Amino acid sequence: MKRKGVSLPIDMLVILAIAVIILIAVVAVFMGVWNPFATNQQARANFNKECQVLVNTGCAGNPSTALCAAANGLVLNKATCDTDADRLAVKKGCGCPG
Image (cartoon, rainbow, N blue to C red):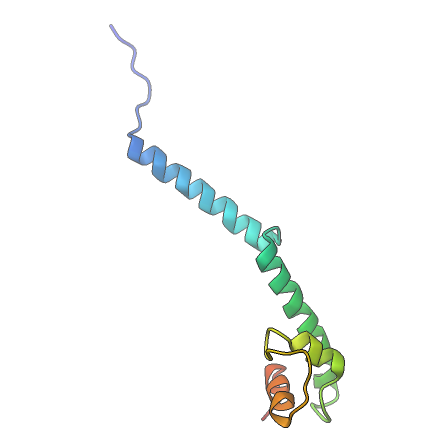
């Protein structure tokens, strides 16, 4: 008489291994461990912090140089707001009316 243990097909083991890897990756993203996502999250946090200053003033005036620098890569493709279109894009990115 043979004793038989739990038998799982190879396909099931492969699917289970892939699921565990995906779960670990998702946890790493939300914990900020995965560097590209963590850098983007930090840039967005800096932009939101600088936007708060603009929004608290009622969106009056031009965006500060710190806000323009924080908008680089998120709303603008450069670190300066040297045109009216750039300033408007930053203000819209902060949620100010156009």
